[in-house]
Image (cartoon, rainbow, N blue to C red):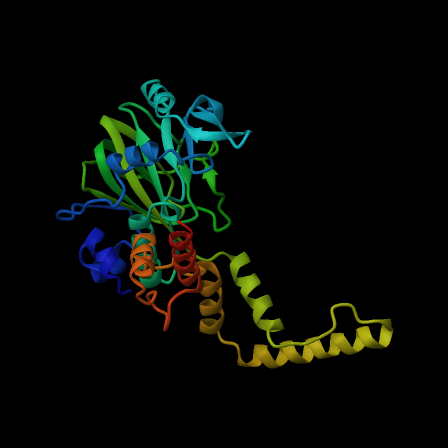
Length: 335
């Protein structure tokens, strides 16, 4: 595994992959590693006014449901009431009462986090998502649970105590909160300080409790393949390039389609290796990368249209720019 991005979090990647990756939980203390998203960025998101559900929710480990209306507000836009906008005052009030703020898919709406996730996803050839948790001292957002992902945690503020338990004992293990009758030995117990990193392998049960201050951490979840992913990839591979009518008419046509499908599948299976299927499944799982920063901003476009310079990436002026200048010229003549 080669990953310069991961090296910033865990140090020597070769040592990490040989000792901890998908085997052991571990704590790391990288030098001067700052999260792209922190409490200041969270305040900026609140100030922007567009943060809303389902990107934020509030949770408690005691199974008490926190309804969205208790931490959001409604707004009227063009005469229509829209719900689910984040209300910072309500969020803070719930934090003071022990609830945890959970921000989902931060990579989808915060560009620096999205760029980090895109780099790591490309380097690891796996789908990566970003979550942000804010927990008061003594608070616990989630009960002990298992995730279907390898998790990297970067502490952004305050302190948080982590308890990481053993891997699942059964091959067909379940996601989510552990049943009351399932006991798992403790594998790691430690406190994360700001800048500290925790790694939790896929399936290892874990929980976290705020240990001091307003604890905030960024979690990167690295998703790996399931049997369902492999089945889906195999189905797509076996039907790729096969042109058959969707609804053959009559017994003879159905029989011919069946024979063609079997012949096509046998030929592909004879040439399809394990690595081919793994690559196809990972490509489906990772999905398209997040688009890089646009080569031209709206401010740059405005300046180029005003000056008559070609729009970046195009051989001539944009038709919209030419229209805008014609309208401005006509307005001057009319004046």
